Length: 149
Image (tube, rainbow, N blue to C red; front, side, top):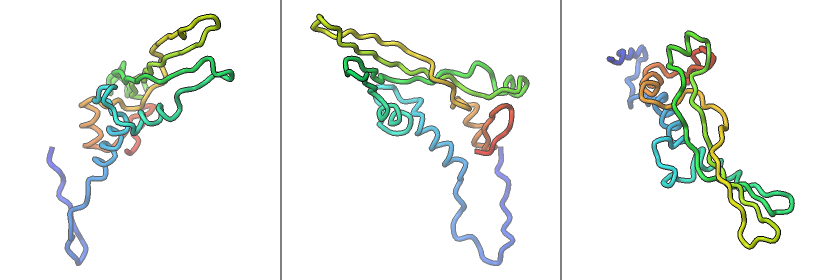
């Protein structure tokens, strides 16, 4: 797809090329999610930093605590065109792995339980097709409405 030629109607010539602001937003969202980075190699930034800041959560007597382990972002259940047809948001599920640690009375070792739970959906999952769509059009699909990125 060719870029349309920009016309400058001003008297002064442009000193520098204008930046691609849409690509800045796409890159920022990609860095926020760190979707392509394995959970063991994620830097404490973006969504990873949010979870690390909130967790662990302690009980009032501090005998139990809920610890953050990792998160994964799945694939969207519907395609972009299906979302437009069904008037729904193009989104992907966010799964978070949490560990519950409980100190049991009379036991020397604490009880551990680890589970992956559904935390919600992220609008516009970052698959390759959507990245190309966002880069070309600079939009998000929410409730079948094109939102500018």
